[in-house]
Amino acid sequence: MGPIIGMSPDKKAETPGMQGERVGLRGLCGGAGTLPEAECGAASPLATSLDRGSVGSGGSEDEELTNLNWLHENLLQNFTLGGAGGAQPSASPLFDIEGDTGAPQNPPSSSSSSLSQRDLLKSKPPFSFSLLIYMAIEQSPSKRLPVKDIYGWIVQHFPYFSSAPTGWKNSVRHNLSLNKCFRKVERSLGKLNGKGSLWCVDPEYRPNLIQALKKQHFPAAHAFCTPPASTPPATSPHRHLFLQGCSLKESDIDAATAMMLLNAAPGHHHANPCDPESPLDLTQPDLILVSSDPNQDHNYSSMALQRCSSRSSSSSSSSLDDGGPSPGHARHRPRTCRAGSEGFHSDEDDSDLGDRDERGGRPRPAPRRSSSSVKHPAGKRARRELTVNPELDEELKEAAGSLLHLAGIRTSMDLNKRSAKSKKLNRK
DNA sequence: TACTTAGTAAACAATC
DNA sequence: GGATTGTTTACTAAGT
Image (cartoon, rainbow, N blue to C red; front, side, top):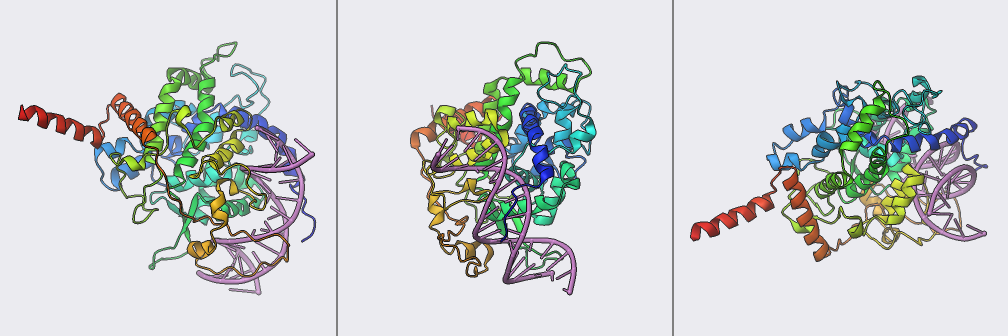
């Protein structure tokens, strides 16, 4: 292989702006809201999660309300710039968020922004490819997508990629292959057309991705509670965002996140881990592994949060690393375990030989390059024993109960308690 | 400075 | 045969 010129000149050129964009987009929190379904579900050919929730398993009310959708509907949409009066159907989150001010360095009231909407459309999204893929998959009704549809989703929601060199597709595939968060699912036998496999989010890593999204955006939401020197003009979309952001306390945001995490807690080892219709049961304590309390957050170090302040996208993904199911392994990884999006990898995976067979079913040929480095199979599909801290678990359950109570939701756990209580009363 | 992570480019094989 | 998909390696940039 010849010398690789890291990035093409044009991409290098856009990099400096990226930083600013990312800073600004962290401010969007809407971005969080930008789990695109929040504002563009109507425009998307893909069903919204709400639709899925109601259609999917025909689950109970609890199930629906404790779903990720709950967050979208009750919190994240509040951040959506275009939320009031209907979002622009085809607008990308980026577009929505940046609105007419664009330059994050400028306060919302600034009218000196030189970024036109066209420029914004050409701006690179503030999300890592991992998150983009995650969002795309999560948006799909079946929670699994072929690569092609992932491309499509990304292009649809981030017009930047429609005009970008096709290298990003390579990056997407690269991410899918290397990222442990994504699993390949063979198409059904009666597949109609198309080649390749379907990709889904590994439930085990879903909390990591959610956490990454959260960390990428929620701090920014908090930031919006600090009014700029001058009040945004009434017509500014940022005003909406600003006001909405102020209406939410950080605790509320954490609460929502906790619910997300509860909903997506690892350990949901369904018969088919990628089966979106497999119900989640909040009453199973072992499923709750992630705390909403930063102090209890063993998966995501505060360091990752700090990183988030300066490098949104990267930090979010790096936090995934930190937050891998094997806390404590994230750091001091041997450099041999590297490449692209291996941020989700952990050490034990590196020793997981035969992993590829499980994933793709295709035996890997001998390394093309006679490099001296030891080959480390991706080990992406390694399964780990998830240990649950009982205390943490209990706290989580309590927190979850409180959150659900605040949200007017009764978990089945709660209901069980109540029923038990009523039984006691009845006995008396 | 060393390390980590994300992104990119490229090569290659398999599949459609 | 060409396009697409999936995997892997190598490298750069940026952050810690």
